[in-house]
Amino acid sequence: MKTNKLLIAATIVSSAALLQACGVGEASHSSAAEIQAAIPVPVEVAYPVREDIFATYHATTTIASDIDSPVLARAQGEVIQLLVEEGDRVSQGQVLARLDGERLRLDMLAAKANLNKARKEFDRYSDLAERGLVSESMFDGLTYDVAALQATYELKKLNYDYSEIRAPISGIVSSRDIKLGQNLNANSVAFRITESAELVAYLQIPQAELAKFSVGHSASLRVDSMPETEFAATIVRISPTIDTRSGTFRATAFVDNKDGYLVPGMFARFSVSYEEHEDALTVPTDAIVEEDNEMTVYVVADGEVTRRIVTTGISENGQVEILSGLTEEEEIVVVGHTGLRDGSKVLANKLALDTMTG
Image (cartoon, rainbow, N blue to C red):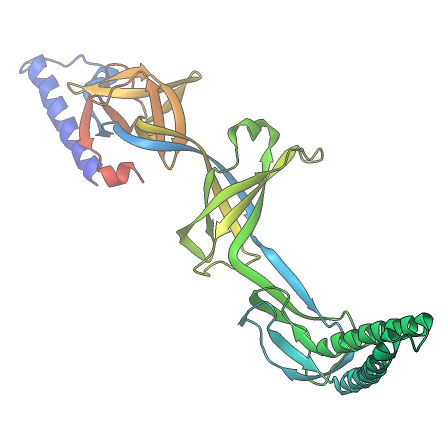
């Protein structure tokens, strides 16, 4: 509406000027093109600004946990107690569930009794062996028997300990795969534990971009569930080989998730910053006009525009870096390029900074 009012006002002023130039009672011989050229074109303008700008690469992938472990039942038995549920945080070694281990306990006690009996016999013969009253071979046999029974007891005790299902790592219980009363076989998956304080993402990068990336580059990501929130990430590994099927190499990024807002399996949009130009001269991307394979801007001075060829650099977040062809003291057209050419009259309106930067 503001632009229409400016255009109407400019038209009235220009038409009056043309009539006055013709004189009272004289016929106007000005062409439509001349009249149109004399009418100032309403445009919005702004000055270039100095700011730090980053060259970034954009990629999409699914984030996952780098620490994820199934919890296996080491012994066979019926589930008689569940001590944790999905979503609970557990520590390494914590008991998650118990199986009916009564048979295993009795086996352990029997092995312990046999071991104690053998030890007493060994102690009794030790004194006799020192005095040479028993043969060396007999005493050696007793020694081996005690060692074998000790190993048997330790094995039975270990099997009994396995009636308690324990967490192999610290983390969050992401799934419970057993129920009370269920009879488990050895090596059945009982739980799954995931550590989500630090997540991982694998980015497939075109090989043409390989030289731009290195370990330590910072990155950021957004997810659909929280589109306004930006999360930090860091490139920690870069594969030295190229996938010949896709022509890409794999870069591994770690994502800081100490607050727990992100969940493994989320689809994320990554931006990897691989180059920074400090205090760069930048203009809004909308100010750049590509004509005949040349990047140009329209510079405003004394109510007229001049077409200026510029050299551009990094483009990011609605801003583009100007390497040459423009200074920060020169005002440029951001909105209203259509129909402009060298010498076009314009009616300039200053574009607000927040509008210019998007």
